[in-house]
Amino acid sequence: MAFEYRKGALCAEQVPLEEIARRFGTPCYVYSRAAIERHYGEFALALAGRSALVAYSVKANSNLAVLALLAKLGAGFDIVSGGELARVLAAGGEPRKILFSGVGKTEDEIAYALESGILCLNLESEGELQRVAQVAGRCGKRAPIAFRINPDVDAKTHPYISTGLKQSKFGVPHADAERIYREASRLPQVEVVGIGCHIGSLMTGAGPFIDATARILALTTRLERAGIGLAHIDLGGGFGIRYRDEAPAPIGEFVDGALGVLAGRKEKLIVDPGRSIVGSAGALITRVEYVKPGEAKSFLVVDAAMNDLLRPALYGAWHEVLPVLEEDEAAATGVYDIVGPVCESADFLAKDRALAARPGDLLAVMSAGAYAMAMSSNYNSRPRAAEVMVDGEQAHLVRRRERVAELYAGESVPAW
Ligand SMILES: *Cc1c(COP(=O)(O)O)cnc(C)c1O
Image 1: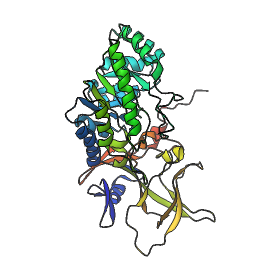
Image 2 (image 1 turned 90 degrees about the vertical axis):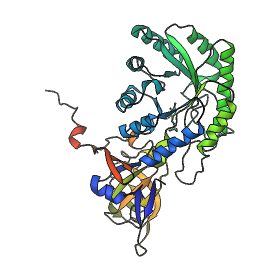
Image 3 (image 1 turned 180 degrees about the vertical axis):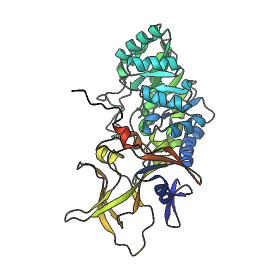
Image 4 (image 1 turned 30 degrees about the vertical axis):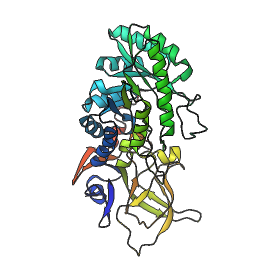
């Protein structure tokens, strides 16, 4: 376990969170190196012996230390912006292991990707194909491309799928795929290298993932017959983790299912997990500022807010909240909404939690490694939290707390 109580103190690996709060202040994100390595290792093990690439989805958590750690383990990277490309390169990621996804790539981003020599641009429309061909022509490069296919996996049987349906903005419709591939194969400025899909996040069962694999394989064999051979098949990410009481299938079950469908195929298999690598490897430490009793509700007002962790406000997401020091038996327990200082009613981290907390106590918001710091903002002119990576008995500051003056450093007042 990345986080567990030792002698009453919640620890990240060997380091008590209380010590981290004392050294680096709160709010503070803490990540476990061992947990990230373990989660990456599950994919690597399941894919061992096959031509494969685990391309970590950078948008889940783009801290340079996280990226550098994964690069060292041999990971590739799935990016969605020029900014993420710059981060991956700064962290030592290999360009030949980078895939560029997303529906809105600009000309500058495409040129940057081509100049950097990335593995593949994952295209999502014919407009994008035309643009990539143009930019490649201008740069004197041949653009390696794949299309993200929207497999339209039946939502009725698999209701939790959110990005693989016809009404989604993502991907090229399954029915148009063959025509678009033929069109691409005639363009000299692009080289068709792969095919991809990503059917949604937080999958718990492997069924839809395996269905999507079968649909992508069927398309791949049709393209092959049409003379369009592919080097890789990218099945996306979206593997669930446990936030509350979900019981996601183990990674091996997803991967083995896909490998079964792809048995005998020579294409490189790519997966791009984000949440399942970093989600449960992180926690957010926050301090209770006030206990505010009320008639209808009582509140713990803490020093972290929706600008630090948006998921509860944005999705109604549930995160476990644990006391950093185990409560003594005598302490009075109340039921609280845990809220931040931001001026929005949506500013909550958790609702209706039984805790024995006093002002000054520390709480840990769990499973906060993915889509947490990465979605943070400066709303209410709040500097972003510090980030710490724990490695055994060591705690490394991997992003210092933002300074208030940095918030307005880029602003200026006109000489009216
Ligand atoms: C967001 C995204 C992922 C990662 O999703 P997780 O749920 O974090 O695993 C993978 N592939 C693509 C194309 C994505 O957009």
